[in-house]
Length: 191
Image 1 (cartoon, rainbow, N blue to C red):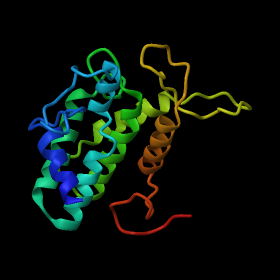
Image 2 (tube, helix red, strand yellow; image 1 turned 45 degrees about the horizontal axis):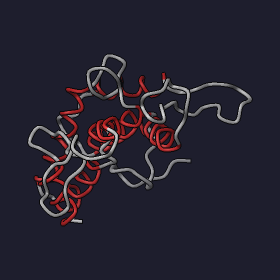
Image 3 (cartoon, rainbow, N blue to C red; image 1 turned 60 degrees about the vertical axis):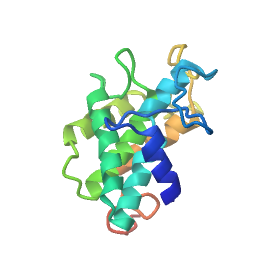
Image 4 (cartoon, rainbow, N blue to C red; image 1 turned 180 degrees about the horizontal axis):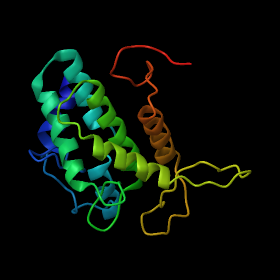
């Protein structure tokens, strides 16, 4: 765990909390914008860190090493600065659908751990973003999923299990569910 997080902090997360998505495995040079991955895929991962901040919070909780706390704080602060008017997170021209759930989960974890830098208004806006992206079609098999453009160039007419799962977990956490599956608070179950 330490080796992975140390690599992450050194080569993927800069001092301002911005993510380097693609790193050369031999030279450790950042390859963002220089490789054959779609640019919007790379942009997506700058805002959806796939729980890098959550892993750092967990390490901080267990090891009490402030560098893990600082890494999580830097990423989350960068997300605060990247929150768009619709409550999502992303570049100037759009919110990244999968980032809404992952960032909300990370902020909820930071709040549960008592981090004094958590901003409730950012959390509330992120929850609103997720609810607005839910596709409601009663009686249809996909009723309740969360919309995401499959390749970021099409309209919001597709769904992805990743975006939906992140959103469901985030909304449950936002609603107060606190269980042993993904909680940083007191270990308890609800039911």
